[in-house]
Image (cartoon, rainbow, N blue to C red; front, side, top):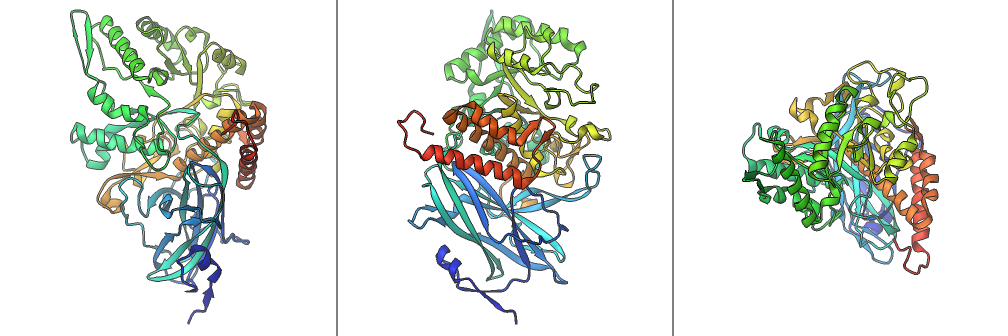
Length: 583
């Protein structure tokens, strides 16, 4: 007979737990969100036995519970339930603001980096109950395999109405009907609130057609296309990300006798709620709106006059809707110098049609393109040269050029790509150290991009795709593209046959969660700059980022800086104010 463990203290805190539980047939510990736990990682010598979280209001904050079965057999029928979080004065964060995910491992047979490690890496997050359809999925209850770890991702959302203070609650780990372990949670809610709409602009590619084909096996109809696209775009917005692409259906037009008429109905139905801030009507990040939107054009026009009138109608429509500050034309992607004359020709034609149009080009600053580019999007590798590697990004201009461009009213965004690991080539020393949205890199590499954005004064971030692998393979069996595991794929298709339930949903990755953590880090820096000036925020950013390829990779140091930043904001937000500095 196993001994029993008395947990009366936790029962009092949680309010509804039994006072006595059976000792578990497994061990467990708490890990922070900046550790990727493999199935064979050793049990830590000093295991953390409670979750200590710190967050502002309107913020998500994750942690991990790792279970390990050491006996000679699997431990089955394990489930998780989370209590409400309460203060001693009775303020409460309901348990429905906490989502529990099962971390599924991806088998990496070929590492993304030359010195990387093959094996099983955690990435896909299957919810116990999802946020989209509110359905139970089949990952729970689960089994912990003998001699292996099973990490769980726990995500706490702090409502913007939450009272600042100290909250306590717990996680029940049950086996069958019996509670096997109780994990205490302590949450400190700080006295500032993050905005629902991101301060750092973004545009991440999302291909609705390949979404539809992955979920339903073929293109079914436009209604299904709009529906699945809206679901994924909503998931992106819940992670503080705006998308481009979507259904990819441009609004239909009629041209007759020199006049252009566009039918905006289907387009506004798809995109309008994201631009108006009505797609998230309640719950987390309610009222959030997209920070960018691309101008969709048909494949071809009969004449340049038709194209000009079409572009003019777009800007007129967007001005009437109040969306024009977010509209851009994706003029050209990664043009080579030989393409520059055509980029200029196309860009001048667009500006002649619509003088206020914001042409976006993914390219470092080039004097030849200056007349037409309004949003420069250099590769993160090309913001400055890495010493000893002059053959990479030889065209990288001085950083002062970008500051000059912003002073002229232009925008500077940036992006990362397979240049972070080597594009289908064996990656050597040059590729070590870059931010990367890959599965098989340490978690800080997935989170640091937005800190780099702050340090280098980037105003936005572009990423080419969130579902690139959907077009080429079943992402559940592998998402290696362009030499990188997960390059261009941040979701997995949540088909009921695979994850249970009755409806299709997006399955988020750990990497997507870490990108949102980085977006929230950026909000901390932006808020500090508002309260104390840019230099104060720059000092914190400088403690994380030295340059684009050298930044803080130690999770404990990274999180300590982040916590100090939050405590600074909490102190500033709690002080008496005349209203001018209210967060």
